[in-house]
Length: 172
Image (cartoon, rainbow, N blue to C red; front, top):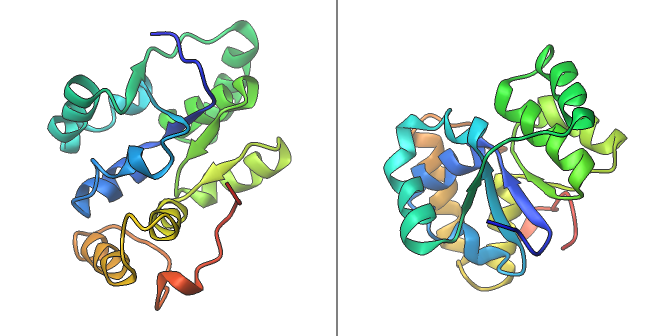
């Protein structure tokens, strides 16, 4: 499938967070002006949420799964990154560096410095949540319930008291 617009390339952690919070179907509605992309390397890491994800890909078409077929330049970058980071993060970073797409990842320890250095826009789970609140897709209370639910199910998210005080990484 040929993508026509800038995409948000989702890493596993954002998908897992939205699945655990019961809002995976909401994720693509937060930024409808962007294509939502999952690389097959990331998809392969997501066996725990595969049914929900397949539903979004096959039945709703809200997320597009694409095969990671890197150019020589992207492959060199991917090989370099893979020696330091996970396969999914490495594929997302290399792909976005050379395709001008946005990364959706909360793995800031791995991606933040690289994205900053190479001027790659990135969104975290809380960024998505913040914009869902701004666009009135979720209430302040629903955002806090989502955060608590995701934490209760074993995922880590930054501590915030209310989504209204959150400062996003990027203005979109």
